[in-house]
Amino acid sequence: MSYEAKFKVWRGDDGAGELTDYTVEVNEGEVVLDIIHRLQATQAPDLAVRWNCKAGKCGSCSAEINGMPRLMCMTRMSTFTEDETITVTPIRTFPVIRDLVTDVSFNYEKARQIPSFDPGDVKPGEFRMQQEDVERSQEFRKCIECYLCQNVCHVIRDHEENKPEFAGPRFLMRIAELEMHPADQADRREIAAKDHGLGFCNITKCCTEVCPEHIKITDNALIPMKERVVGRKYDPVVWLGTKLGIVRKGQDTPSA
Picture 1: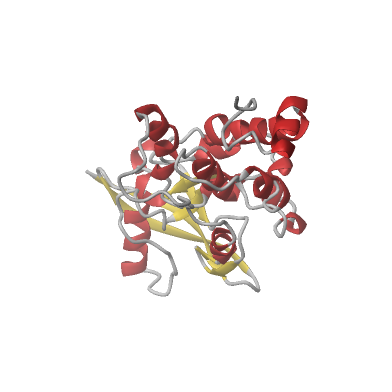
Picture 2 (picture 1 turned 120 degrees about the vertical axis):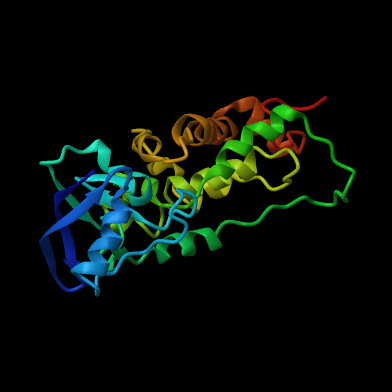
């Protein structure tokens, strides 16, 4: 069973652009990315779109569909009515290169600024972890770097001037993953607050709402990182223990 659907697709580049109307065939079981590919094949061969796996695992086909940030390959046409006009536009927070393709290099720049995993002097086979410790950071590794969380974070979406100081939820989550890993010897709290702008986050949970992997970014990464930063800075016992060198990473109280 097929029908004709009405689409409005943003066409343009970094200079200017506009929504262009199309009518495209839709078949049962298809997703928005299928329709965009059919549009390329039949009416708009020069339409630029970024995609790769078509399985919701590469994060490449991020777009805004009827104003909602989504993966095109995971948005089924059956979620819309047959007489509904579907609008597809590029994600808003990053500069447009052409049509539905945006320049997300901001994210790679932020990724390079985060110090890598630091096991210290521990040699292979010497360290043991509890399963609870494994599971705590495992959730964050499901991230497919679609950057939808970055796109909806109003700290950078609405305030271009914040980008130099704010890494965004995806990379604050990466810092949290490393900070919560018991084998990582680096203390990430200082860089989270001073270098990557953790204090800018006001926990609106918009990042969590759009995550296609259903990672609880706000509750499980950002809020715990805020608690760790505040505890280190304002808890008098921890502050004194840090100064005396008897508080190690992950501790809330001095060791005996």
